[in-house]
Image (cartoon, rainbow, N blue to C red; front, side, top):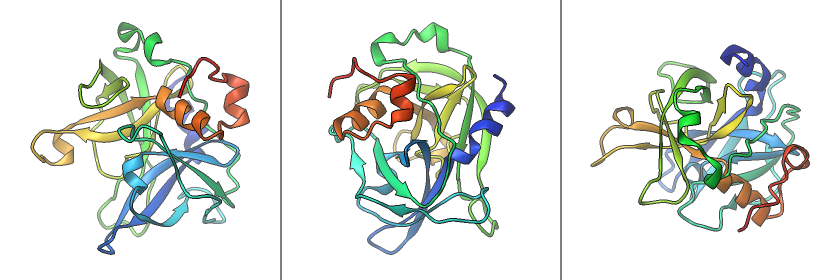
Length: 227
């Protein structure tokens, strides 16, 4: 599937999250629908923050979501994964997650594959959050020494606000989610590498909390996962 077709099919599944920290400063991140009102985002986007708003920039009339339950976090605190159950958004599009468990990833198979990144980086002078889409490619697959699970290094520029957003691969499934920019010594986000965390920890988090959507079970149930 070409990248524009991926965008047309799945962009309505991508929402923004406005959060507020203890200093009352607001920030923005991204989440995406995987079925049954379950949304995935990066843990660091929402942890220890107040969620102010969850909404979509391209569905009208505009609707704001409501959390049905406090966020669900991956049982491993180093895994940058959180799941939300959000009502009232009325989004019927969901992103199918891939079945590429950690031990099944063939690095060479993924290198230079085309991908689509979607998210809500802050755009100066914009009146409201804007969904940004960028075409990129996979440059490397890394096993990081400071966290578990493989990460895909991709050619898109890392920007704040993309965190928690989906990465879709040209083979028509979700490759993973955007986590942090990989930088040294507190360098600016834009100087780092955009990293995409693979799907296994997403599936483990959902299975651990017993919220794996039926839509994902129908495609691939993750029966070989362990918490």
